[in-house]
Image (cartoon, rainbow, N blue to C red; front, side, top):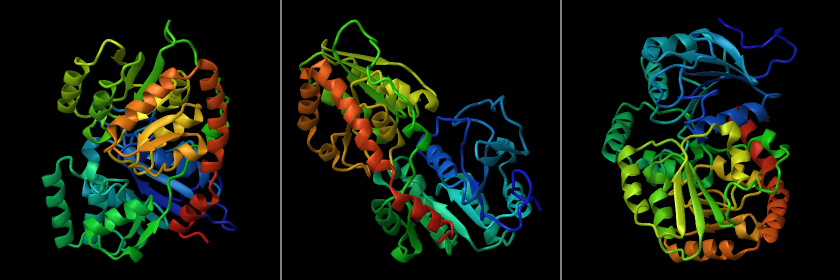
Length: 399
C-alpha cells in the first residue's frame, strides 16, 4: 500500500488523505472550472489535507499526452501528488487497483458523468473497493444549461444509475445552495445527504501585482470587451452577439476559448457576420489559464451572459485584473453592482445588457481606470471568505 506523503511519514501528525479522480488536471487548462476548483482546493487546504489525484494523461479533447509529465506513476504537482493515466488504461480493473493500493481516508469523485466516477462506483458495486467515505461532486452538471446538452443520453444514464443504485450511500458535494436544489431535483434524494461547500478562489491570484492601466491593444479608444469561455451552447455566446447587434456605439469584442461545440460555433458565426460595422469582432483562440488575469487587464469589460455557472472562476479572474463583469444572474456572483464589481442581469432583460454596454462605452478612460482600482480592493472582501474554507474542511471530515 502506497503511503501518500511527499517526504517523511510523520505518524505524530497524520493529515487525512483524499484520493481524487478528475477527468483533467494540471498542466491542462481546457477543462475550465472543474480543474481549477480542485487545484484551488489543493492550494488552500494543503496544510490540512494530503491530496492524491488521478487524471488523464492529456488535456481535454487532445489527441496527444502531455510531454512534461510521467505516465503511470505518482509525481508531485504543486501541493498534490498526481497520477496520469493513459486513455486505454481507464478501465474498471485499473481504477479499482489504484484505489486498492493507495492509502486514503476519502475518495473524492469530481463529476457525475465522467467515466472515472462511473468506473469507481461500479468497482464498489461489485465489491472491488470499500463502500464508505465516497464523495461525489457533480460540478454543475445538473444545472439545466448543462443537462440539456445531450439530454436524452444523460437522462437515460441517470435512470439506469438509479435503477442499479450506483450512487447510493455517497456524500454529495454541492458548490452552492442552488446546486443542492438541482441535485435533489434530478436524483430525488434527501437534502440532508448533500454537503454545501463553496468553490475556493485562486489565492495566488489575489496577491498578483496587476498593471491597472490596460495596454493599448488598439489604436482607438473604443470600449474593449472580452468573452472568455468554452464555445459551448450553455455559455451563451450567441446571446452576447445578439446583444451586440443592438449596440450603437463603437466597441471591440474579442472571443477567447476552445471550440467545444463546432455546430454551435457555426451558428454563432452566422450571427457574427450580421453585426453592424461599429462592432468589431474577432475570435482569438485559446489561452493558458496562467495568462488569463493578465489578458483580462487589457479589456474594459468581461461580457459573459452564461446560462449557468457552478462557481465561475473566470469571473473571479476578470475581477482580479480589475476588469468589471457583465454577467447573467445564473451564477453565485450576485449583487455585483452593490460592490462596484459589475452587473448580474436576468437573461430576460436583453435591453439592460445593451444599456450597460453603451454606458460603459461613454465612460471616460480616467474613470475606467479609477474603477479598476476599486474593483480589486472590493474583490478581496468577497473571496477571502472563512466560511467557504470551513465548509470545505468539513466536507473532508475536518472539524
